[in-house]
Every structure is written in structure tokens, then in C-alpha cells.
Length: 134
Image (tube, rainbow, N blue to C red; front, side):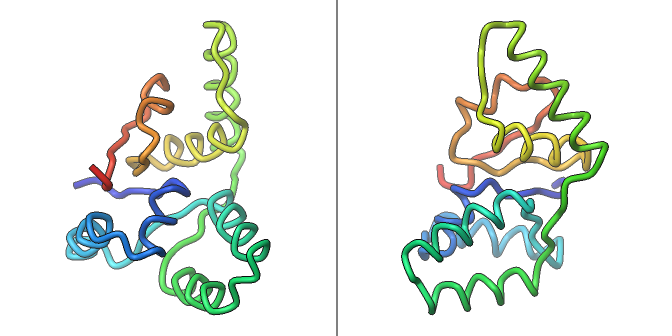
């Protein structure tokens, strides 16, 4: 099992108590001591919780982040993201910038991206994906 990074949708499922995702978390944590999320996912979750005024969930999310790793953008991840952007645009396809940035972090760290949005991400060469909600 390779190290993983979570897409926002999977982390959201976990925080909402999805049993399939929870079981995958437990299995993964038997090998690794923490879960990786990107700074982009951190932003997306935090924005949603703040918008909804979800004070208790904000505390749960803060505790989750303290026990796990939030990965920042780096020059390497930005290079990977920009290469994906160029390749997709040349093929006449587009991917949201947020997803490009998450994919770039995954690729530059050699992580598998855990996402429920497999159809969207499967077009990215060199990106390993897995769905913990299936």
C-alpha cells in the first residue's frame, strides 16, 4: 500500500461518518500513522464549515488536522499541476484549478489520490487514484 492523499469529497464523507470510508481509514492507519490532505482540501473543508457556522465540526476538523498532515503547495507540485493543465488543455479538456493543484501535490509526492471523483481524475497521466467510498 502506497501513501495516500485525500481529495476533499472523501474527507467530507469521513467527517460525516461514512462507514465505508471510516473502515478504509482504519485499514490505512494500520500501516501509516497519519492521513495526508492538501492545503487545498484544508481550505475547501474550512470554507464550507465556516459558511455553515458549524462550530462543533470546526473543532473536530481542527483536531483531525493536528493529528494528520496538511501538505502545502511547493514549486514541484505547481510544476506538476501546470503540466497537467497544459496536457488537458491541448486535448481540449479542462479540469478545475483546485483539482489540478490537488493532483499536482499527489503526483509530486508519489501519493495515491483517494477520491470519489474517479472519472474526473482518471484522465491525468501518472496519477494513481482509488475510491474509498466504493
